[in-house]
Amino acid sequence: MENKLSAGENRRRTSGDRRHSSSRERILREIEVRPASTADLVAATGLHENTVRGHLERLLADGHITREQEAPSGRGRPSLRWHAVGSDGTAPYAGLAVALAEGLARTSDQPAQEAKTAGRIWGAQLAQDRAEADPRALVLEVMREQGFAPDASTGEQTVLRNCPLLAAASRRSDVVCAVHEGLIEGLARTRAEGATAKLLPFAADGACILHLQVAS
Image (cartoon, rainbow, N blue to C red; front, side):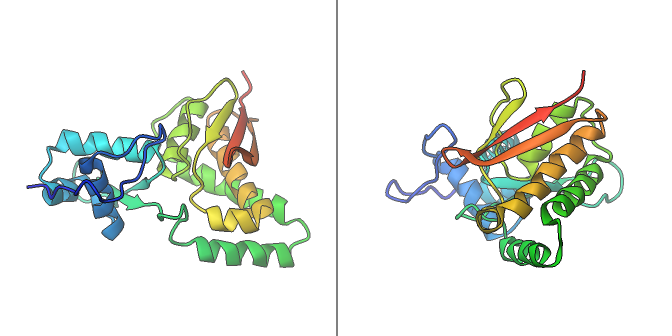
């Protein structure tokens, strides 16, 4: 049976600034202890699988968690494993990201350009074996999975409410954001050759603005 959270315990909020329900907060805390599959969370909370899935999708959209596919094992689709984004808005390897970004900035004559090229390669790799045919749909789904919490797009513009490498981006936005910009272009170009991305760091009340142009 689910352990209820007391009324006085601090709960995180949704992107709509509403407090998490006790069930959603419990699921998030379980994931913060260790990465978990959906089945793990069903067993830990005693909630129905559909209820858990609904909370996970909302936590993913709000930028609190990320997901990755486990390695295939036998028949059927690989299961998903859920990971928590750090409570301070950073990913577990943010310190490493800072070190790598600063190292690239010291050793390269064009650190942002090299970072963007690396991001494009990363994006192309992530796009492999993905079902999404539409470049915008692909970008938004991968951004959700990577913990950027994208808002619904308005034309070519999308607001990214969370940065999984906030500490690194705050210190070396020229390099870290160039990687993310390249990642988006790399994803989109696997579906639309010539697609371009422009990322404006912290341009909207601390959120980032993404402009994605896809040739018709």
